[in-house]
Image (tube, rainbow, N blue to C red):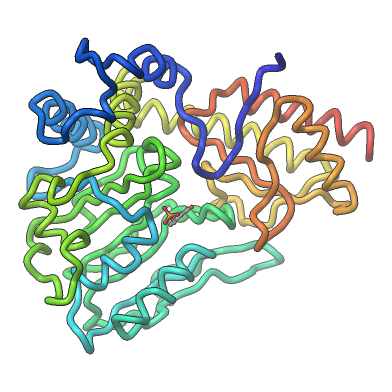
Length: 361
Ligand code: PLP
């Protein structure tokens, strides 16, 4: 069988070694005679697993002690509602930075709960997407928080600097770039991420919240979305997504073995450089994001002749290169190359793209 490389944006491929381990212990985890997904979340074995996963995540991201780590439900979109419910009261206003499709969706959800001030949006300069410098943003000094999405999965736009917000809590949707490079967690009030890209399977979301932001949720906040309730119950107020938590724990261990997020950052740069160089060198392909805002995780590109899109995708699939179709909103192609994608996968894609261009250019 042809070796398959899966470029899906999410649920995305997981590290081969992790999948192998999960397969080996699928029906008999730790000699329990049953699967981890069949164990009580309150068993001492599962609690040990849960605590180890949290500690590994803390180690990987150097999460300071004054932050809680929550393993919860509801994916990224769940947090679009949980953030305003936990960090603001009725009548408050919050600043949102719109850099693509997901931050736009976050605005639409937040508007149900809060007055949203869109303080900045990406613009086009010489046909390329850029984020205006922060000095030009229209920030509200009384905002309850500032929300942004450092990596826009659909648009392939990554903001690689952290906005400065003073005393106003900064909230980041890191669903598609968490654990891809070191970050200074202390600059953030809340970081959240749906798991299905760089953490594990879907069904789990991780929230990292500064402790002074707890105890501020609105009274109407559903308990399962209330950061304080979740934190008080060690993320077990209701039954957590145990199998996803277990797999996330395996991914964290794998990341540590690989040298942690600093090593990942180097690999991710090498992978994305390789792919963007191919796109830039061949007139056959184009990318519309300014180089400093190009995502290292989701590389979007168009064929100059869109009539060849279908053929490109069919031939790629035959060559074992899966899920390269761009999101329906932007069209074209997208290669999602999260931590689990080896450089060999990107090299195979580049070889295919060069060959396809030569045959059809
Ligand atoms: N935010 C970002 C950046 C995403 O990429 C996604 C999903 O792909 C979401 C939010 C929504 O996540 P979910 O489908 O888990 O609600």
